[in-house]
Length: 294
Image (cartoon, rainbow, N blue to C red; front, top):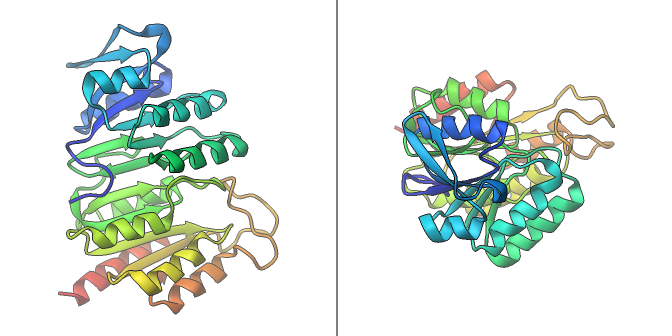
């Protein structure tokens, strides 16, 4: 099985006719994603040809949903328009909005994340690679050819570390990989994914990738201790990050003793999570844990 995204998912791409939207829509289609339309008010009524697939363009999310039954939106619009794009998807009743756009002002993210939660739309992102259920569907920019369907669930703040762990564990494979994004405000958290993977009968082990900044990993550790029965293996990026300097993601900053990689590692280990010191060691810990369960 998979969480959030399955082969039945019907995907609408907001910003499909832009350069990034075009490139990644083609990649999603090649991965088997059921992309049913794009949204661009200025090009409504048109069709975009992607190799052997003609994808219609709608004037609004609501029109696209009414015509196709879409239940997932992938947002590729520029930062200045991302808030209105997500609000439009929420107002249309879209169940899942995957916000790839980076550089969105924090106050805009705060607004649409809260608005979506009130209205029952799940937001993944912003500033994220999206999510993939290998062999079923790929919503975002995650490469589809570096792994296969399997029994590991992965939730990660980092896009590139998502890809690396997917590749290193490709022989085992994944149920779903979710890149939640590294901004200070995100719609879907580690805890959300931990709960979903815990309930997924075909996910046997969960990989949690975190990084410096904030307390999301400490809160995830507390949740694991009370609610997660499946084995969890972790990795925290940023052990050598200097204090007070933002590293990569907008939320990746250490202030004093708060948000350090060491503090996060210790919190996870206290609740029985094995934490690797490198991505490669983390992959080895996953293999060992799965073998010990046989």
